[in-house]
Image 1 (tube, rainbow, N blue to C red):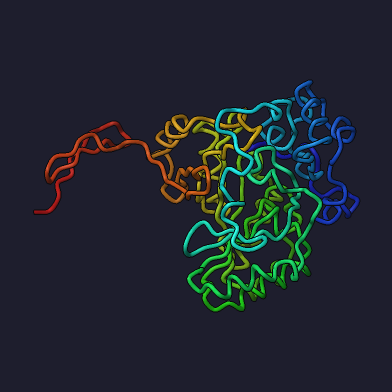
Image 2: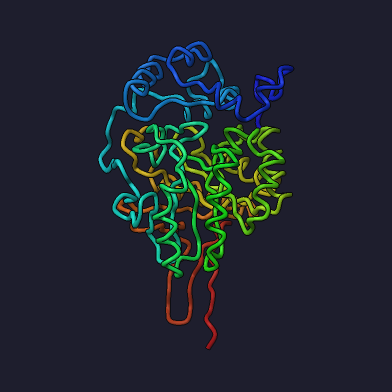
Length: 369
């Protein structure tokens, strides 16, 4: 586990321990950012651009406290502070890399697979990550979606019983008030054909104060609810974040983590090993290691797939299987996720396959006759 935040999690003033205080006092301007951090020229240029156009700035005081104030290469700071490179485009960049607009089947509802759908219930997050897949729409001013606005999406889901799983996302659904979130989930839970509802949230990472007893008790009657969270670096595994994960697990919520592979942040096996081991200690299952989506302006944060495979191979056999996620590429255009593995098959013959183990030893497996 990394060193603890330089600012106390629960100051003497009780307000910062309240998630609503954290939201109200989020850093949203260049001036506020400059008062908190010693900005590099690249950061200042990026922050000015973000303030004027593009993905806005929003960083909770809690998450800001995890940033090194003097180091622009801090792995938390790189995730939330804009940089000038966001104005640069890389070949393959897309506004909507997952083809969500093309696969929208009702307002705020995206269906890319036969058995599951994505419901976008808000455009707000506690922190706007600089690699956000939905930078085209988050923070656009709409805020939480009303039940009326979501009604067409609900009616589509009711008419399509082949949909068994709904991912509730945005924005971040747990950045909404409980009073707004629960009626949405109740409407979904009333659909008998839905096996699972998933909450896609970064709140345990960026706003752990939100995981309150009140929230747990309000959501518990709606099980089975799965929580899909998003830790990217062991520095994010603070006592407050670990307590949020404990509350979720104790409340009966399976918690799965999707880590995005990010250049200069977590693109080495040692960092990911510390992260994945810390997660399983917190009863959070590393689920996906995601190749970063080719969002316009994020080329400086993306690695190559070859680099991802090299890292995954270094982790194979080095960490327990429950701590080893699938390496996934969500293919551009919304054609679906593809799992990628290093090449472990050395040769094939009729009835025999030569396999290379993590030890570097080649072993022959013989098929039954």
